[in-house]
Length: 242
Image 1 (cartoon, rainbow, N blue to C red):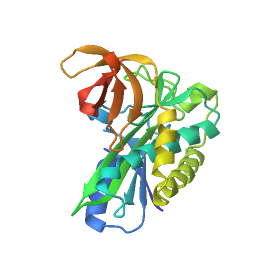
Image 2 (cartoon, rainbow, N blue to C red; image 1 turned 90 degrees about the vertical axis):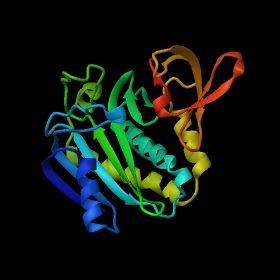
Image 3 (cartoon, rainbow, N blue to C red; image 1 turned 60 degrees about the vertical axis):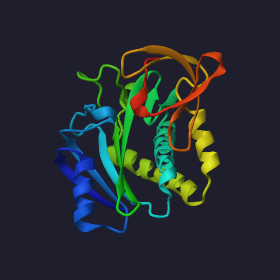
């Protein structure tokens, strides 16, 4: 893996998309920015990150052998890699808030944004990761936490990065070997609020109760609604309110 370290950029995902379009690399590329000025999250949300205290990075990986209908397994693998890395650092009460936020308790510690590169089929992905490491004050994200807040210790960013890379390739190998069923089962076992009655909100503002049961292979959330009815939802169709 080639690692490109930047002092500052607007968004590591945007930088890496331009980088790969211009150079078309064959090997994996990781871009790590000490300061990310316009980090993006799911639904276009702003990602707050104090310069020099967190990991804001993106990884480009070619995935030409992976059918496009199995691309959500990349999300599963990335979420599990971050989850396992945080466990190794001593964090507890971790869960994956569908589709790919990592929570410590009820607070968000990591966000993931995955963008596909499609050129005559799925050719690659850009995996953006924002991991709160040593930041302890969050002015724009009141429901955020960090490794330092959860453990009471500060960590070397490069050591945390190397651990993430190690775990990432462990789960990439699961995809390469075709262990899709086991990967999906492990991901589902770590879902936040799984098998618990939860409140959701539709885009129109309507609230309803459902129970998270599983995810589909394409990444849709499968809820059990009233009268034992099961229904699939994508990210734009609902928001989990707890």
